[in-house]
Image 1: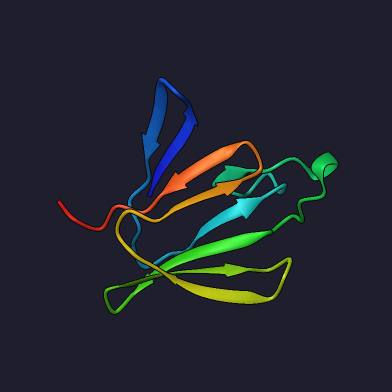
Image 2: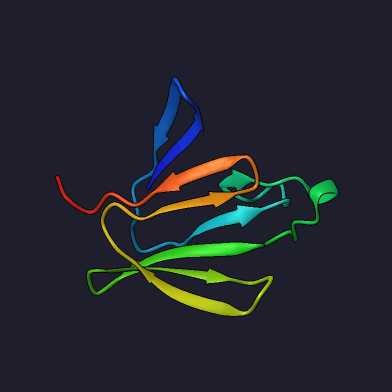
Length: 84
């Protein structure tokens, strides 16, 4: 995952056996503010058998994600990067 914090700042988070948690919990890997309506665990991103998937726990939906997909979640822009 490439997290775009703003136009000039980004962080790469490697996906592995443990899911990446987005939410308002202090344990979340990517913080989303509770005051903006985000749950402690708002979404999780997993990488299983070569497939990146996001489970939106707020809408109870699940989506396969592909290289180049961009998701705007709160103030974050998250880009899926599956190639080297």
